[in-house]
Image (cartoon, rainbow over all chains, first blue to last red; front, side):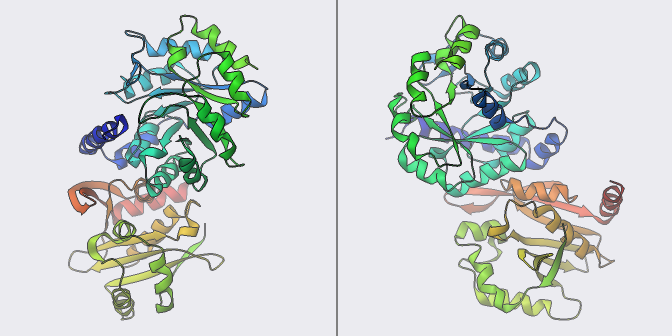
Length: 264
Length: 180
């Protein structure tokens, strides 16, 4: 059966082929030399956690396969500024267009106005996407282990590290976490959303958190709706949370963000 | 970072082959010019070619200051074209991620331009190999063009980027580096 993830990967291959017709890694690397050094994504999370609070990676996405249009007509930069004022440690910005309504133009617009470290969230299957992320000002990239063989995952991670970026390696089950343990990362996400069926369940983090290697920090991703969810997940020792849809939909984003940061 | 070149020898063949356990690894390293699995006789032929006076083919082990093998590279020379071709560049698996790549490529460039009739060094690299391309750019190579869908692999194709550095650029590059 073809899953949503399969469909996304299929059109990513086409996007990458187009990208390679339009530019080269050489040209993108030359652009990287002209932009500011990356901000410490992992470091910003550590700082927030060491202050006793929750470290939030607040996400900007216009739509998703599971939720449809999330906030039609919204200005991503305004939302990012609200997240920043609410105490977010970092931002995650979807740049996938067809399924999530994002773009690198959104990413650059936010980059110009917001001082927080920013993660490019996309479906990475070729190192040119990592270089493209840095050339557009990214401080970190997401690598989804379900989209990559180990060799490719390592290549993507090392390419990001070469450019001074951090990597959030996303997993969803015990097998993927086992693979993650052999890769050179220190930040591992457990996605509470099954990317093949697009349903969320916080018990995924509860069941898997003990498998995070000692040298890595856990980020619990997706399906977090309110402070009670954070309090529940803190029992797994999670202190870093990636929150998207539920925050995007709140009218009082800044205040709600502050409440999530302080939830204990 | 103090690196030097040492002529590659027969006892090193097994170790080198072990760096490339899969067909994809060999392809990424050597292009389609070597078969998989790599045959000893192909490497031995290169060692023999390097052993003559003024060889047109060189096969090198790259050594760090403490005698550790950190990589491998090969250079071919074409007198008619005043050109060298840098190829089969690899960092030893246990030495990757330590920042050796650019210094290794710089060493190869210096070696090739030691022959004063060499005007240009060319290389080919698969266009998704970001880490290699980064090292080549930092060593002064510039992108020249793309051989599209040059290599079939796993029901798809890889593209090849062509990069080069001219002696005039090398001399300018060298001066800039010295000035830093």
